[in-house]
Length: 162
Image 1 (tube, rainbow, N blue to C red):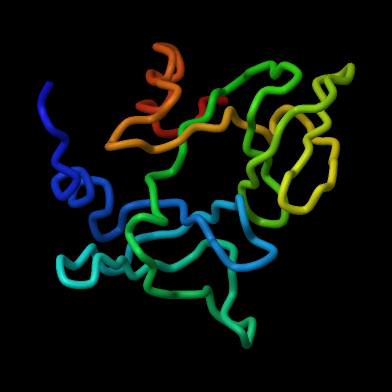
Image 2: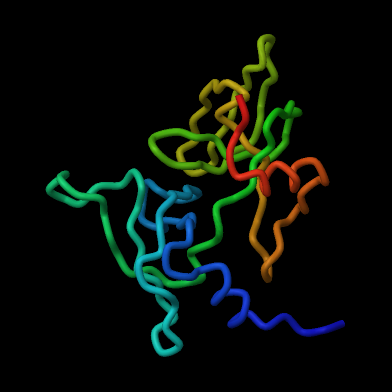
């Protein structure tokens, strides 16, 4: 089996202007992913990216937050199904407080609503199905679990059709 060249994968995935998600490790943010844009690419010396977040603001609240982050905390924007039903105990990401938060479905309700439990905060919140996506990990340049064929086609479309 061929060895994965992470340097090539990172160079392709994290080009200037690339859309990414960043895992924030600060207290109160564990298990969250916030989207942004690569401003400066990975450097060999520091292994860092310089990014600008879409929804996180600077301390003064007037500009989008920009910061250097370790490349291991970044991944491309996670793929998402157009329409999907979730099951009990399924790991999901829920869009909440301007980011995607890792959780587990603990109840399935009528009308496409789901209760999601968040381990770090020990809270449960009810979400519409449209605010959830299957939780996936970016591992050596591949999404785990892998995308289904129709999901991959949708990702290549770029925009939703009306």
